Image (tube, rainbow, N blue to C red):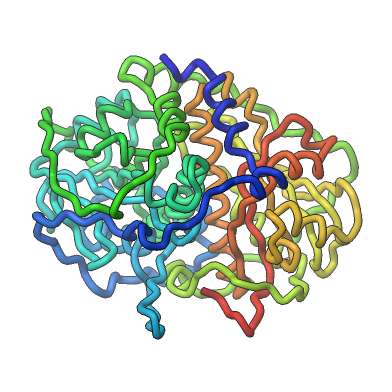
Amino acid sequence: MKNHDISLAWKYHNSTKHSWNSVRTNPHFLDWHNQPRLFKIYPGLEPVPLPQEPPQTGLAALSVIACSSGTDRREAPVRLADLASLCHFAAGITRRRIYPGGEILFRAAACTGALYSIELYAVCAELEDLGAGIYHFSPADRSLRRIRSGDCRAILVRATAEEPAVTQAPATIACTGTYWRNAWKYQARTYRHFGWDNGTILANLLAVAAAREIPAKVVSGFADDEVNRLLDLDSSREVALSLVPLGRTVAPAPTCEVNPLNLETAPYSHHEVDYPLMRQMHGASSLSMEEVPAWRSAKPPIPPPVPSRSLIPLHPLYDDEIPADSIEQVILRRGSSRRFSRSAITFQQLSTILHRATRRVPADFLGPSETRLNDVYLVCHAVQGLEPGAYFLHPDLSALELLKAGDFRKKTGYLGLEQDLPADCSAAVFFLADLKPILERLGNRGYRAAQLEAGIIGGRLYLAAYALRLGATGLTFYDDDVTEFFSPHAQGKSAIFLVAIGKSDHGQGIR
């Protein structure tokens, strides 16, 4: 019952904060000779090739970025081509660049440090063109590898306390995080990054599912040991983070029992360094079979903040004004901006990005009347039609509240770990969460949810910016300094994520 001992979440959160002093006294260095490989490899399993050119829907990216993925049909099947597209546009390799020292592989979604610690697995019934089983998605060769045969969906149904979306799904994507692949660079802060990196992948996956009218939902409430065992994970090194049930079927999942497989996997490095704090945090936020039903019902809504002054209404583009680029086209050209030009974007562009990206996430950690866990703050440097300054977004009112006016480029660069990107961008979007009520009602699992939701909305910001031919990049920050800057409005809240938006410098381009 560790989930209810929220002192453990506070211990992890406070211990992994960045400060001016902590980044200067940390003796950690990057051991390039021990850099982990970027892919999970099962040497003994044969690949099931996926279609090399996933079909595209042609639907405009800005039309589907924040749609609730679903249809009114009684049944919504999932086919191999659907899995191929969802996996590829969520976590696949979208392009390659050769350089004198080797090759750079660009992935569909942003990831901290380009270390790609998130793995995807598909738990499937018998599909039209794919046998029932559990498959691991391999971005390296765009294939699936079957790690279990047979329909094992009943395990997920049981592990989620019969969550309806899981019960009805012919296929479910399970997302896992591999500690060492991220901790090699970021140490114990990796557990925060799991939420960010999983979230950006889910932003892509949900948008592509919506474009294909495939029902999809983020499920974070499940019995961890059951799911880890089903996926044959060594939970000291890799753990399940989220589930995304896909489609609808009227056929119930048959009963199923699983045995350990102990499949061989290639080592990531010569040796791995353990950071116990992140594994302690995962253990503290893990749920047992008995806890899941109660956790799922513990969702009294958190009321949105009440404006304290006059508001500035957002002015997003109308549907007939948005670019026609499809979600697939946007993902294929998406990358993280390496440098911003300090040029201004329009208020319509910023409004469109915020309006599309901050809509409610289809997730089980939100109550029926609750729209989000994270609050959105901005520092706007160069937005035509908007005074430079710090703002709070009221998504439900589709409006901004000016907290303080002024040129804060230098200060925002400092807040973003003294990097140029948050200073040079047009607008820096900060996610802050009031962790106290979140942890009180969701336990330590609420910490996972807050990080994951910020990652999903941040991933939507990426997609919306790129749909408008702008750039974006995710960043880390000095935790307490961010809260102090936005206070007194943000008093008591915790910094969760940061995304910078603007026009990419043409000399550096977009990667």
